[in-house]
Structures are given as C-alpha cells and as structure tokens.
Image (tube, rainbow, N blue to C red):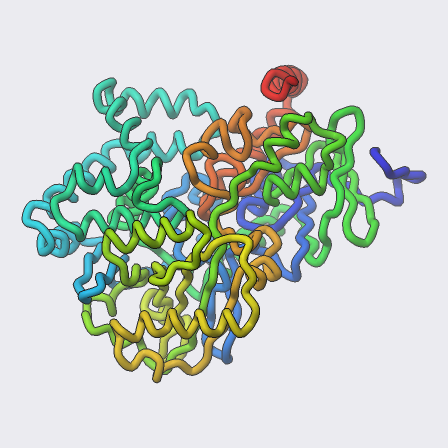
Length: 540
C-alpha cells in the first residue's frame, strides 16, 4: 500500500467495497453492491448522509427546507431508482397542482401542467398552433421514452439500448434527433414554436444546467426537462428531499451495508496499479477487498485522493482542465402565507422561472460567460408547501430561489445579504407584499454551499459543466465515458461521470456494475480490456 504499512491484518477495518461519499450516487452504488451480497462500507465526510439531497429546519421549527436540490423528475423516470423499490422504505412522491410557470416581465405566464390540454391552452395563448406543436413533441417523446432512458442510464457505450433507440427512431429521425442534441435551445425554439411561451420553457429548462439559450447542446436538456414536466411532473418527496436519502439509507442498512458519517477520506491507497483501500482523516485505514467507488468530484478524486504520481500524465492534465458549472447563490424563506403572485397561474406551480424574456435569458448567460454578476438575474424558485403541504404549518409556505453567479468571486456576508435583497425585490415586483410575508430567511453563497457539501465546489450544483465538450466520452475527461479509471478496481461514481448531474443514480449504478464486472467470473478479462483501453487513451 503506497505510503502506509499495515502490521496486523486483524487491526485493519475491511469491507468488500469502500464507497467514498454518501450522496445519492454513492448510496445507489452501495445498495446495488449490497444486493449482490457484498459487504459495503460508505464513508461520508459530513455529519449526515444524502449529499445534495437533504432537508432541515433551517429557519424555525415546523418549516422544512430542502438544503440543496428539491424537485426530482429524473428520479421519477430513472429505471435505476425504480428498481430499488424505495416506496417500501417510506418514499412517497407529491406534486403541486401545476408543474412549472415561467413568469415574464409583464406578468404573463407560460405554464406546464401534467394535463396536456392545460399546457396546450397556456401555450396557445402566446401563439395559436403552439399547443398542437407541443402535443407533437410529447407524442415524439412518448415514442422514444423507454429506449432513450435505457440508453441514457446504461454504461457507455449503450450498445443494446442504443440499438433499440435507433430502431425506434429509424435512420431519418435518428439523424434529426442527433442534430437536435447538438442544437442551442434558442434555435430549437424558433424551429418548432411560433410564440415566446414554449420557447421560454425550452430555454429556461435548459438553464437548469449551466447552458444558456445560445449554447450548443442546451436544446436537448431543455427539451428533456420539458417533456419530463409534461410526463411525470417535477415531483418532491413527501416530508422533504431528505426522505429520498433516508429511503436509500434504510434500504442499504437492511442489507447489511454500513454508513460512517464524519469520516472524510484523505487518501486512496494503491498497490501494483490497483486500489486496495483508503485512509480517513483520523489516520484509520480501511482495506477494500474488491473495489473502491468514489462519489466525489473527479478533480478531487484524481488530484487529491489518488495523486498525480499514481496517474497517467495526460489524465492529470485533463483533470486540471475540468470545467465546472457556475457558482450559485440560494435563499430559503419561511413565509407567513403563500407568495401573492399578481398572476394567479403562478400560485399553483411548484417550480417558478422568474422573470426574464428570451433576450433577458441570453443577456444573463452572456454575463456569466464574461465573468459578470448578472444585473438582471434569472431565478429558479420552489414553492415547496404548494407541492407538499407537510413542509410547513397550514396556511404558510416554505420557498427558495437560486441563481447563478460567476466562479472565483468573493461573497462575504454583507454582499450576500444585499444580493438576497435584490432577489427579493425581483419577486416583489411580480408578487406585491411578498417581503411582508417573510418570517425568516437562510442564505447560502458559493462558500456556504461548498462548506455544507464539499462536492458543491463554489456552489457548482451540477457536478461539472454540461457543455458539449464535457459529455459522453469527454466526461469528466477525454476517455471511455465509463466509471472505470486508470487505477484498477477504482471507480468514479459521482455526477462528474456520465450521465452527469441530477438525481437519477446513473453514475452510481454504472460504477457498481463495473465493480461487479471486475470482480465477476470474467473479471480478469474485463480488467485486462480496461487496462488496454485506458493505456491507449492516456498514452503519451
């Protein structure tokens, strides 16, 4: 073991697999390994499991706030999450009356409802015919839904599911779908819709990543979230996001898995090119008999936990060029009553986009790209008690909003408070009386978000940029697009890996499958194949 000597085997803690990080991907990976009969130990640096899926009474008792993420359409359609049967461990989904409202500067709203007819009517008010155009997109989504999701959540390359998707589409539609995947959301909106309502839904949903309306690749993210909004809504766990993490934890523990919180891993140990264990911040060593899986950002795994000396020089250089998504400022509120939107359509929506038109979204994105704090921020908001009445006392509301800011900036307490006031002023323009309903607020800037969850580096909530040059075989670095790393039996299980951010369990499941393949009957052949491919990818 590099740099460490172990005198007595009995004095060393052991497990078949050590999982670094108890975020949703780490917990999914641990569950799948435990299902296979492995002895699994999860080491979590912070005080509780869940990563960016946690709930707390941040402001006053009875008001339950999701500290980081809140709505989970990808979890609702993920075959990985569905396969875990988390309803048996207490997970219940809840929905707001409407899914999403994009509020324009003039208070008009483009609204997505789980009722297709209601959505069509909303979009037709912006442009006759756009309701029918939206229905055509939904029909196209319904046709490819299952093979597309299977391909998305299958280890790369998705040979079987990809072939099924191709058969479903046919050659002509497959070419056009591939073109859409590369397009900016603004271009797709112009091609398929005549009015601003549907175009704003595409562009605004694309900005749930760090891709603005003019960025290549933003169309597919915006389109996918729009289709999921129509299909399954933006559901929330009853009682708070932490109930999703809690269900994963209970399921794992029921299968003998162990979780140790407050134990930060400081080193991945290697011997003869393979991962053999970890060391935590107390100096304790844990030996991994079969695998180490890391639900941490790729740069942290490669540059800090493994170290440049144990890795190919090309991978080290690539890891240092890893592209993060934008920093984040988030405000949570405990409100004495629901937000008094001037347009009542917004009152029914769980998710709010506020308050930019198409030109404003482009300016916001350009400001971020230029390293400027946007003068007119784009707010993504959640009305959580509207979606789940258990989140706060009757007649009240828990709400939050976040927006992105440039990386590398300094946000002290005074600046953060002034910016929160600015965000509240934006809401007040569309909901007169909002500020009088604030009972208390909780502020998190880039420093606070990272301090609470070290994987949210400067508040990067997506685990790395969604830009097209950091997808598929380019995520997290140019390589195989798989969880396997150049260190044998070490697997990347975080959102830095394909298929990327959002809560769906894809990276964790892919890492678990790779670990099982490496330890299986054909594991020797699998290991040699991965070493050969990794050698070709990172050869000098």
